[in-house]
Length: 288
Image 1 (cartoon, rainbow, N blue to C red):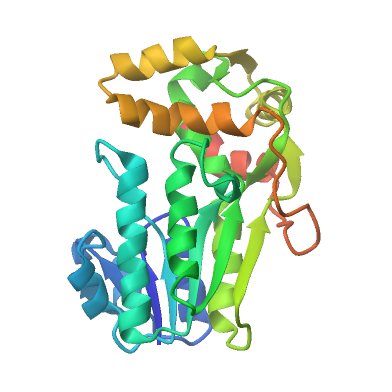
Image 2: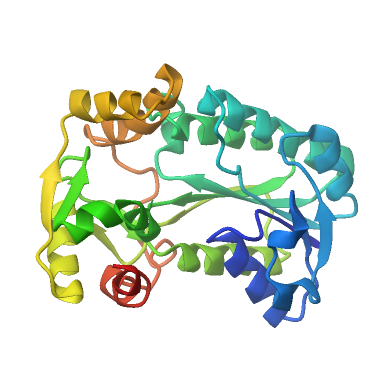
């Protein structure tokens, strides 16, 4: 029995589809079953569950042999504390139900444990899952290609704004490829212990390189523009975010661009195939 959380997300939906195609009937936990794709619904066992409620998580994961755990996005005033709360719920379910293996969707930078904004909460979740003594894989993922979908207005105007230094290279990855790695781990049943596996995508890219790729693929000029931290934070405050929410968002670029080096180096194990150009052609171009 494989249990999947956030089955409608960019990664979770890919995991569910691959498990079904492999002949597995996964159990999926989600707050609103009506959001699940109708074609998938007949192929899975659906359990209505609130991941912020420990009792709900424990009930939903009874009998699980493997768990794919994702901390869902939160509007909580303190996102890092919210991540820790979600991680504690996952850890309790692992212990109470004796779940042998968990695959956790973490992030590059979680190894810092502090000073990386929202990612600090994922680091805390890693620690909580480690403390269960059960086997766990932490997938330390790079920067999602799909983050560009939040920049549509700027891209339509020909500008790619970012608080990251324009010449800072970091791994960029397709969420679907993360789903491939997660599904492979869930389908395997011989790994044990604590494993950290990065998912780095095919290449480390700077925002200058990203803008050049988008210019070529989208057939429109895209110019990278650096947003100073004080400007970026002021914009977040102006959008109504609380002080801790601002720190969670801004702290990621601030904390991971000052000489940070990922714990996992790029290798055949961490490199996935889909290029930014291929993703932009199929996912970004149609919505611009």
